[in-house]
Image 1 (cartoon, rainbow, N blue to C red):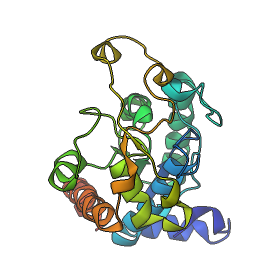
Image 2 (spheres, rainbow, N blue to C red):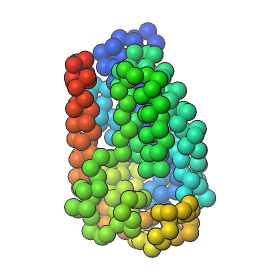
Image 3 (cartoon, helix red, strand yellow):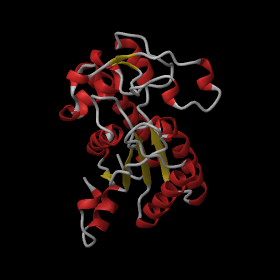
Image 4 (cartoon, one colour):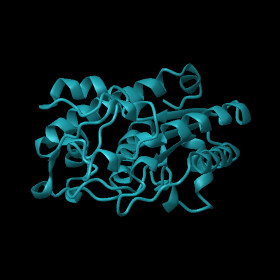
Length: 247
């Protein structure tokens, strides 16, 4: 159920029936020549809808900007600070709490946002003690990706516009993918990139961290389905939610 299309006269009843708010969070940044700037937004939205179907949740309008410091100098990238993002998320969470929501699930499509999401969740833990707050970024994906990828990753943490993320798009939003332009670009990421601020233009011209030409819908479905089941399991495993009848 899409929150923004409800009306003020009827939405209170639907909040009381659900009490679960799902916020897709993404970014606007370079994703190579074959994926759009809003890839992270699209993925977060599509995954959020799947979650909402399973938990009877209300999907909030997407928060479309994120912390993209590493890619901020690439054409099309729009960066906001962690400080701004944290404040925005805390304000949203507190507003939802006052509206009667009991669960706030942030579904993140951009790894660079994770620090801000974690900090926002901690602040909401203090200010809204009865609000269950989650921050999800494809839980379980690393193991699943290792099982099906055809080439080793450029980095043990980062994945970007590569075999994996392009596969996500082929599964969740194929209409936005141009596989004719999908590049093979596996940069040599220096070790110091994990220990000091390093703009990505220092090691890649495309913002692609792997062989995007190897992406398939089947690979995307395999990983996304595992992540979805993990998300549902994490949400269901919170005893308070079961007691409130939210599942």
